[in-house]
Structures are given as C-alpha cells and as structure tokens.
Image 1: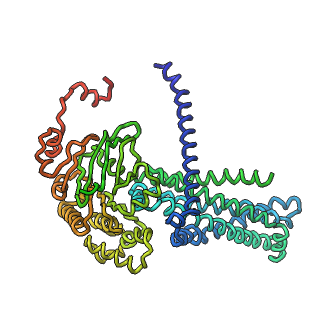
Image 2: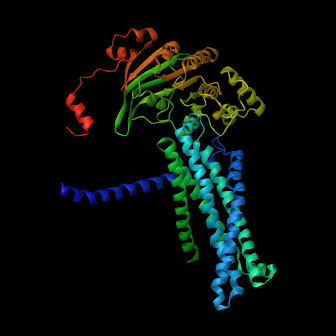
Image 3: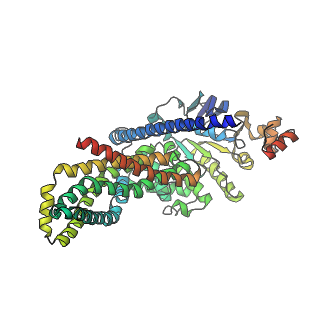
Length: 271
Length: 264
C-alpha cells in the first residue's frame, strides 16, 4: 500500500499537469475560434442576412465606455499625481526635478493609461459579459437564439467586441489626458513652474508613436477581455454557482492576460 | 398522405461514451400533436435537442419539413429555423428585453416589416396566449405560467408550421398547466401547426396528444394513439403509465455495502 502511494503521488502530479495542459490548449483553441467566428460575422454578417446591428453596439458602448468614464477619470488622475510624486522623489537627489515631466508623459501614455484602463474595463465589463453569457447559457437563452435562426456569436459577441474595440482605446486617450493633467497640477505646484511650461515639456517629449503604442495595446486588451469573458461565460457548468465562478475567473484571467500581453507587446515594440 | 413534417430514422446518439438513444425512429404528420413521453433519463430531451439541430447524432437521419438536418450547414439550419417554433422548458425569454421585444425579436431579425406592423403582430400573438397588455413588462415580473405563455407567443411569432414544446406543464399548478394544454390545442386548430410536445406529465399527454411516442432508456416502447398506448399490454409501458417503480430483487449484501461505502 505504502509503495502504491509513493508511486501514485508523482504519477498523479504528472497526470494532473498533463490534463491541465490539455485543458489550457483546448480553451486557447476555443478562444481563437470564437475570435475568428466573431470577426467573420462582423465582416460577412450582412451578406449572410445577419448583419451586426448598431443598436446593441451603441448600448454596449454606453456600458463599456461612457459609464466607465468617472472611475477611469478618478483612478488615472490619481495615477498621474502618484507618478509625479514618485518621479520628483526619485530625481531630487540628482537635482533633475525639472525633467520629471518627461518621465510622467512617457510612463502615462505608453504604460499606465492603457494598463489601468484595461484592468478597470476587465473588472467592470469583462466580468459582466461572462456573467451575462453564463446566465444565458444555463437558462437556455443561447439555445433559444440558435433555434430562432440567430447566430449567438453574431448577436451577443460581435456587438460586445466592436464596442470594446472602439471604447477601450477611446478611454485610454481620455486616461492619457486626465493622468497628464493630474501629474501636471502636482508638478507645477511642487516645482512652482507654470502649467504651460509643463505642457510644453510634455509636448516636446511625446511623439505620435508613444501615444499610438498605448492605443495599440488597448486594442489588444479589448480583444483579450472580450474573448476571455465569452469563453468563461459560454463554458459555464453547474448553475448559479458556476456563473459566479466564471465571472471571478474571467476577471483573474483577463487581468493576467493583459499584464502578460503588455510585456510581450512592449518587448516586441521596443526591440 | 403528404410527407411527414418530422421524420427521424434509426437515431443513435451518445453523451460522451454513454449511448442515450438506441436507434429511434418516429414520424410527425402535418397538423398532428405528437407527444414524446418518458421518465427522466429516457432520452426524450436528447431526442428533442437533436430534432432542433442543437446536437449532431452519432448515426441516423432527421428530416424536418422534408430537409435532412444532420448534415446541413449552419447557415441552412438557421434558414430552416425560421419555419420552426420552440418553447423551452424554462421559457428562455431574454431577461434583458421586455416581453414585447422578446416576441418581436424573430420578426426584427428575419423580416423587413415596418416596426408598427411588427408591434401589431406581436400584440396579436400576445392576445393568442392571453397576455395582452403585458408587452411592457420584463420577464422577471411575470409568473411561471405567464413566462411559458410568453415563450409560446415568441415561438409562434413567425407563424411556423412546426412547433416544439419542452415540458410545457413542468413546475406549474394543475389549473395553469391545463390552460397551457388548451393553448397548445388552440394553436394547432387556429394555425394548423404540427406540434411536438416532450413531457413526462401523463394527464397532459393524454389530453392533448393525437399520437404518443413512449420512450424508455433510449428505446421506443410504443407509438400510437392515446387509446392504443393506454391499452398496450407491455409491462414496461403499463409500469410507466401506472407510475410503478420497476421492481428489482433486493440484494441485502449490496445494500449493506452501499450504506457502509465498502466495495464488495
């Protein structure tokens, strides 16, 4: 018996590792097929007699974008101030406080604005998408769509993806502005420089590429958040508890995926 | 006689490695109410899901309105779905839309009618199911029976020649359940539909059925009129009809082993 246990332990570990890997590959494949299907319906829907409608896109845009403006504003303003405090503290020993605007401008546009906005939207809208699709799956609403001759991907996922692709980059641009203003207010107060001198410094520092770097990342985050929400929602099992699990796991997975893709993107874009 | 509206032949299906249906064949004629009856685990819901094209069978064929659906492309299946109505067990109304929008959805998606015409058609369907004036409510504001009736209204929105109902009377009190039976009869008479009803309720089945298919453990035990099924001498059918538990020889050792959780 004891010998059995000794061999069973590592064997079980290897087995669960193997199963976990298969599951991960499987869900990655499923995610890719959902994304492909969504793009196909967005492009070919009209020709197939099932156009993606503008009404649901607009209402998704309200949910994903407009309603997120207050919280995005609050958090990115704070991030701007925080970066300035850190920057000033870091540069003061070198007597280089005057250069702090450069760091804030680059940090905000290339990294913090898209990252914080992505994480916020994953928490607000990615989870909501997972919950909605999860609930619709267990209450047979997705099956009802199918038997009504309505493709669920076209009806539910395509508007969400389009709304996310429009609103997440837009929110990121807004976040850039707010964080830069937040940083500027603190810096000008601390260093006694005028706001227009700060703006000058930011404008000479920033290139179109820096802003585009952030916006491109946010578009990738938009796809990641939507696809993870849909995959988690549509594979729900086990009733209301399952929907809860899917919601939580969609947030955790989306945030992890955002951070990881961010790193890969930065690596690829800066080398 | 014209071709049957539903023609299932030798349908074999699996769930994982478990075989659910063991070669089922059944026809539903035009204008007929066919009740598919069986206990839980009999495979009746599986049969329904296959007839709706929601699952692909292991083998066998399913023709709906003269067209083979097991090999049909997704787009053709969507096209065919416009001619089929389905009332799900829990209603499956979209909880984010009002009752009226739910009923109008098939019209909005599949027709180019002016919105006012759609509204009139939606109200007509709600009249048929006795829900006139409820179009502005959300599904969560309706009672169980009302949700099912609204689901019927949505199922018949496109005036389909073929309607499927999954457990229409499950979870309802006898009065409401009988009202739904009446509604099914009325829909058939008023719209000349073929209706397939999946249920485990005997009273309801005997009341509405033209013919009954009795399923048990993936096999068809009988197909016939209400009288034929009631008078069937087969023991399995009689035990189903009389709601008797299948008698099994008690095994004291196995019982003890189950209780103590030991393996024999």
